[in-house]
Amino acid sequence: MSHRIIRRLATLALAACALSTLHAADAPSWQVDTLKVERHGSGGHAVILIPGLAGGAWVWKDTVADLEKRDTVYVVTLAGFDGTPPPSGDGQWLDRADDALARLIADRHIAHPILVGHSLGGTLALRFAGRHPDLVGGVVAVDGLPVFPGMERVDATQRAAIAGGLRAQMESATPEAFQAQQLQYMKSVGTLDPSIAERVAPLNARSDRKAVARYMAEDVGADFRPDLKAAKAPILEIMPYSQADANAGPVKLTQAQKTAYYASLLADAPNARVVPIAPSRHYVMLDQPATFLKTLNAFIEAH
Image (cartoon, rainbow, N blue to C red; front, side, top):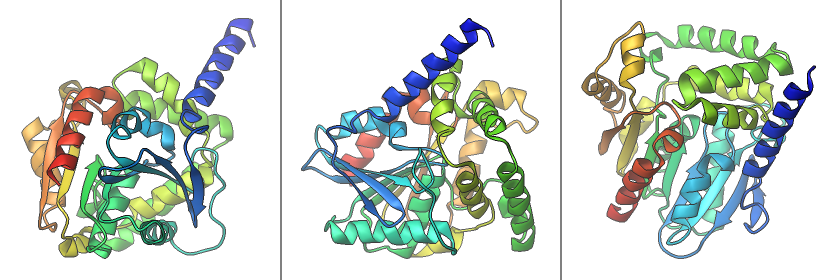
């Protein structure tokens, strides 16, 4: 291995450590079942931030820096992500995360928090709003949906088979292959900025790949749309859209068509709307931080 490559790897490792530990020294943290929790700020609204698949508190760095000036912010990390140990025992891990979130709200007497979830975290927030309608003041799902896009067209047996195959494929990957997968994902799906992809991919790769595989399989194999019928809180779905990606992909959707598709997946929710942010990919808060924060703050202030 050349000295240049070694220096490059060392730089990425240092960046990962610096970003993932930001706020760690001055933010109280504790464990609630399968959730690691950090608290930032005090007063104002109560906001709970939930990262997506393989994500940690670092996903919300800029969001926390903005919200903590006015609000009380809780950032949770699912067990197995961002260097935390995976859950032990059997059962559905999303169910355990749901139970832990309810316990956090009860133990800390958090009155009607606004849940903000990215990707898998958005899916968890949506189903939580349906299963615990009296605990939630609002939900912002950032490219997280009640059913994995495309899986609404197949039945439960087919979804389970697809989810099982994806889980087996990821679990069998070597650590090196898992790291390469994370980089490729960030470059092709995660963000429009290659430099952000290179900075963020090592942070995702800190997660336990078997835990990532299991959470992913639970997400892909589930359909939580029926849960939304009981939701009372207003729901905002933030949808990324990139015209360049739409033109290059096999299925070409205009922004309006994609918005309508997302709205159809949320049709069971009594009070949901979809807001596109463009140009952006899956990590909207990294591609369009200013627009994302403006949209989020407007929702928080309105509810």
